[in-house]
Amino acid sequence: MSLISLRCRARARHSLLARTAQATFRPLVGCLLLLAITSAPARAAPLTLTAAETRLMAGNPALAGAEQRIRALQRQADAATRLPDPKVSLDASNLPTNNFSLTQQATTMLSVGVSQEFPAFGKLALQGRSLQAQASEQRYGRAAQRAVLALALRRAWLAAVYTRKAATIVREQQGLAAQSEQASLASYRSARIPQSDVLRAKLALEELRNDLDVLRADESAQLARIAQLLGVERAPDIDGHWPDLSAPPADPQAGLASQPLLQQARAKVHANAIAVRLARKAYEPSFTVGASYGKSFMPGSPNFVSVGVSFNVPLFAGRRIDDEVDVAGARELEARFAEQDQRLALVRQMRDAQARWRSLRDKWSRETTRMLPLARQAQRATLSAYASGQGSLGDVLKAQQAVFTTQIQVLQDRRDLLATQAELDYLTQAPQEGQP
Image (cartoon, rainbow, N blue to C red; front, side, top):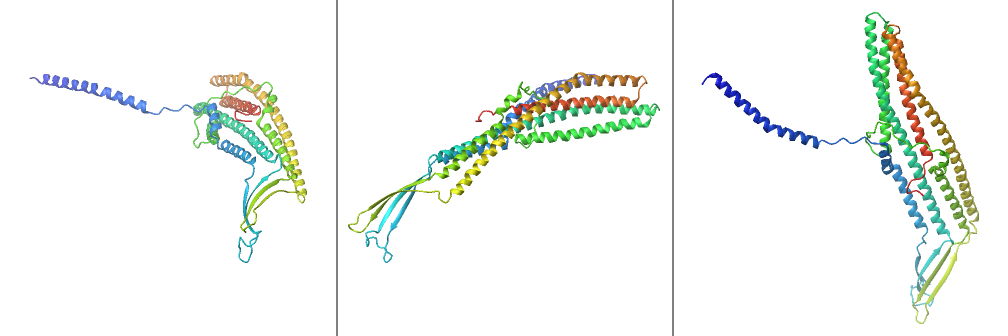
């Protein structure tokens, strides 16, 4: 057998082994890849503002604590309407001190009695109504706190979205600044521009790096604020798009009447008015009705039954009661003045927010439709002039900076416009379900 035939057979066996290995391991590799794909955890979708607001209402610790205060007041209101417990007495009366005998004297007896105190008519009901009014005030307070937290969440969310979008613009500007630096170096080496232009290009690039660091720190701070509001420790991955907020109502001041802060002030006035009526109940006496049965152990001596009614007379406490009524009346007047002040403050805040919203809307519209296109046109014209040798590198840097400044200003005004829109929504927000 020739050497050539042996080599051919070896090559054939090697080819057969290779095809067998491929046929064996190819399905195995496919199964392993499929297993890796299916076992890999799917990345959760970014958190949206709507989902974050839902989590805020369910998981914020401050709102949970306010709910517990409301429940406590409701339980106290139910307990305050109950009569006090009756009192049972066991007495040994007229015992002789020489031998403590129960059969020596006819007046010696053992008695058992029961007494029940009845407060002034209507006092218990007023106590229950007073605590229910306080619970109602706390419910409106919780609604106001929930609206404030929702506004804080929206502001932090808008600030975080702004920092992300601004960081993207800064990175784009960094690319242009790096190209300008390279172009300035090339022009400087060919003695076309002075060294000062190169230094200005480098300085512009370093300033952009500083801006990017500041934006990253701001984003971390806003994400930490969002995590605190949601009641979690880890900063969430939020959606980087501008959220869709409801448009301001045509007549925002019409919704002020249902604003939780104003409703809370009214509930406080009502609670203090009930407190005045409750303080005046101290002028009326409370009654205690009692009955007892006495057992005499002396032969032939009868048993005895006692029945009586006692009540307090506000003879010496009249001045104190007068002072308590005056204090309650002063607190009611204070609550009424606070309600008026709260209404005026909300009206002022509403008018201020309306004026800012209209101004920001018109400003942002001009920036997006006129100012930013003009800045980009000026940048292209400056680049063309520089390419034809009619402009300087400083003019190019100024044009780039003008576009960058306008883009950042557009983002800032968009953020402020949406934040003002969220503030208007907060001012016209009515109590949600579960509120009085």
